[in-house]
Image 1 (cartoon, rainbow, N blue to C red):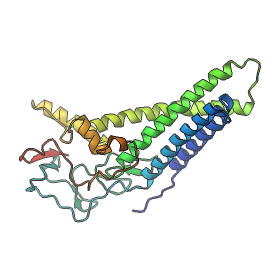
Image 2 (image 1 turned 180 degrees about the vertical axis):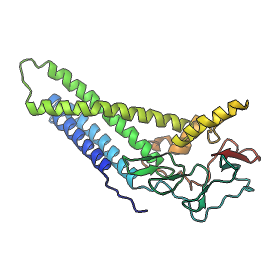
Image 3 (image 1 turned 180 degrees about the horizontal axis):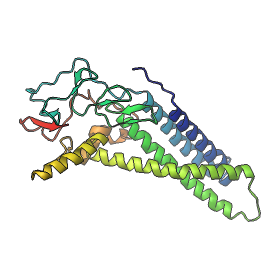
Image 4 (image 1 turned 30 degrees about the horizontal axis):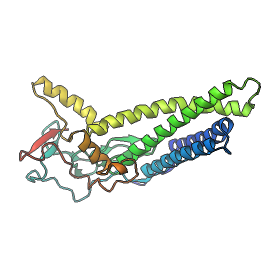
Length: 284
């Protein structure tokens, strides 16, 4: 299915980025510190870097395919290298997508918007007009991280500028400055709050090696397990550090870089059962 890389939500996001960048640099920083001073230039350079990284990672998240199921994929329940097989809740059969006419690998789900199965699907995001899945999850995570950092940085500059402007008793700020300042604050405060909550949520998911879909499925699985006196454990949870390495890569220095050479095929994932020979099934 051919995707539209320029939807209305994407235009809104890019417009917001452009407005916030212009206002922060050429209104807030310029009026407070001055772009001809060392502090002003330093802050403008740092904020410009954060905005560039946010924009670049946002663009990659939009255009990168989240991961599709290979046409040749066929689950092998006798494969000792795959100790976990996900099955349907009803009937216990291996998960099969009727719409795509193929079996689903572990952690794959069908997206009704994209009209195809996505590897390690987390969710469909309207703001990137794309699914967040196996191949672009790290890029999406890094984008949110840079966006939150840029918003918090802009907030600090905004508060500092407001405090400075409040002490200028003998000077009257121009109306255009005041208007831009107010619009920037009205846009920046809820945006920073929303992105911070989103980042916190995905940090939690990453630390537990879960997707948004798996979190909600895990809540139900935990309830069912407790109902019969068992204990549910997420099979892909390898421990906090190993989970971070699985998602962000083996090198800590590259965790905030828009690279994802470590992700593998997306057909098989390490599990907590890898050191055992018992084949386990997960109802989905």
